[in-house]
Image 1 (cartoon, rainbow, N blue to C red):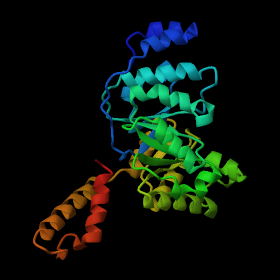
Image 2 (tube, rainbow, N blue to C red; image 1 turned 90 degrees about the vertical axis):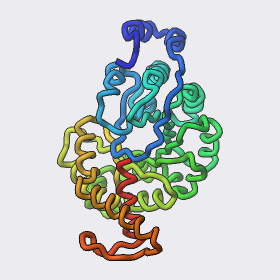
Image 3 (cartoon, helix red, strand yellow; image 1 turned 30 degrees about the horizontal axis):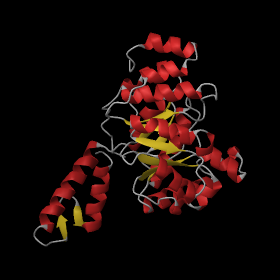
Image 4 (cartoon, rainbow, N blue to C red; image 1 turned 60 degrees about the vertical axis):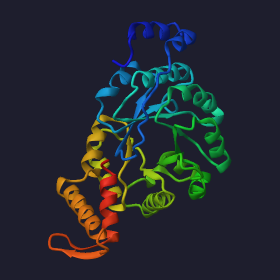
Length: 311
């Protein structure tokens, strides 16, 4: 249980006592999780104590503490304080704790300023449209906190490469349903074989990576449809994705199975890195190994890329 006095919290929520809740929310020094090697980014309802209580036991590698969609306007003030309490209750966490705030002009500014002292690992801002909005986010968010952006408007799509204006911007999340709506495209087009969808995914992936930003693929909403999710995962893995948003523990398991590296692949990468660095120290940048064939710098960099996804 992440909260010391869950009964008191329940009473304060029932009484709609925001002041009382804020008095319980005390910032503590948090050790920031700087890794972006996560494969799963699972949404967690911050207005639900039962959901927050499960936080330490969830297998997802990134937990999205959600204040936006799915949280009613009436619940948002309580969700914000409970989110802050959850952060304070986990000064160290092997999961990346990211808070998805509301759009800047819909309460996001106030939420960011309130959350800064509680030091989430990252703050994710939705409905971004312009570089000026990103600059505003940079001015609001504490300098030690990463910034993640939701790509779900046509303006953000057109300016994808221009939004990466600061090293603190680490991750882009593809909000495909909102993006389709903004583009006037029917959601019936959302199936893996659709060439428009494949173009969109590949363009998002390559542009993000070219900017040095981690791309996270969209949430598959049919959380009980394992076969449907697997079809998307196989496509995305072939494209080069290594992370996907999700909404249930069952989806987390499938994502990890698909995006994980087998033991033999990890061993191969480690040995290639070791062999190349040994030869490079002797001034040799290309050589043949009887197990792995020809090894040069591009092969070495590929092995490093594999290892970077498990660190």
